[in-house]
Image (cartoon, rainbow, N blue to C red):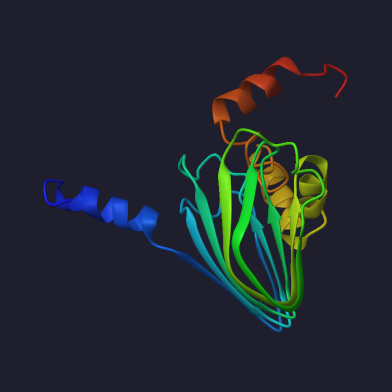
Length: 180
């Protein structure tokens, strides 16, 4: 990195810097296009966290989620083809990872889970379950209201579908209904 300009080094450090999410006796939602990082550190004590990792704004490559959960739930919203690697997790007492539809994923982004889970669980949601998990939040309602005022699609329900503004505009132009 010695040969890179100073602003390029800052950009590399910004992508590689971990994003900290803390949920101490609270529930924290991070939905839509909320980050461009690939490393996340989640600490939760008697609370819950919901992380949306479906955004195309997250750079290509593996995503690492470092967890420290104590009687907490971490819900991950991931793309359909994502591979969840839980080899680096340590379970104290009870704890588990629920990933109902992830057994058949052979290609796609790898999400590595590392750290400690004590009497907690990590729930992996894909496809329609991920969309429903995002829709049933206050953040989605606020995003839908703001999107309606601004005249564009909400980003919280499906960040990948709303990432390209030109595609959204073209779709809206072709779906005009003269009766409205």
